[in-house]
Structure formats: structure tokens, C-alpha cells
Length: 147
Ligand code: DQA
Image 1 (cartoon, protein in one colour):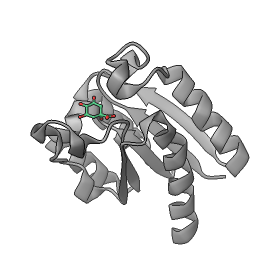
Image 2: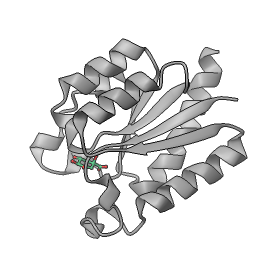
Image 3: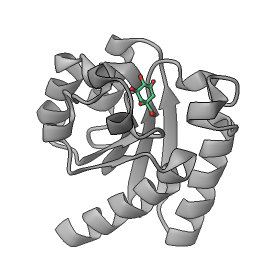
């Protein structure tokens, strides 16, 4: 059974109270519940990790090798700055879907650039927290196409 890691970066532990006009009312626990329900329906496994620390996210990506088959990754603001996270994705060779709750392209120009996107199989942005279970589904479809 395929296993997908849903990885969240800085400030995403604040979902539900953080700028709800942009990120919605769902908490990270709600997101986990939605992904778990989607995974049960799809017949795959999901695991979750969140950190506010860039190095911990690098460790999580490295640690996914041989444990998970793909990663759904909302790197938060590190999306726009982190060569280390880009390189970690490349180093593991695991397929990664970059995810954003908000439509980063409709926001400040500093959010228009992703350091990660070119290392990812695809990007989901702007669909709210509903994007997470969609990304789980998309990753499973990707994995089924490559196995
Ligand atoms: C985000 C968008 C980023 O620009 C921002 O820094 C975040 C959340 C999103 O999910 O929309 O922390 O990744």
C-alpha cells in the first residue's frame, strides 16, 4: 500500500486562527482528518509532520526515503526562500507535490516565486485546505502511473 507524507512548514500549525480570511477556518487537525478520510477511501496510507524549522523539514524529507512513496508539501514561506528544501527534494528523488492553501499568484509578488516548484511533480494552489486531500489523490494517481 502506498504511503504519502503530508508535510507542513512554518506557521501552518496556526491554521484555524491564522488570517482566516486567507487560510480559512479549518485547523491542521481538520486537514489531517480530511487526508486520513481520503486515504481510507483511496486505499493508501498517510502520515503527517509539521515544523517551523527549515532543518527539521530537510530531515523529514530525507527521513521519508524508503518509508514513504511521495510527499505533499506545504513549505509555507520557505517555499519562496529555501534552496535547502529544493535540494532535499532532489536528493531523495521522491515525488513531491507543492501545495498552497491560498492562491500565491494573486498575492504579494514575493510569493510568486517558488524555489521548490521545479523539483516537484506539480503544484496545487488556491483551493483552500480542500487542496490537501486533492493532493493526496493526485499523488496516488502519480504513483500508480510510475509503478
Ligand atoms: C502558503 C503561502 C505562503 O506564501 C505562506 O508563506 C504560507 C502559506 C499557503 O498555504 O497558502 O505560510 O504556503
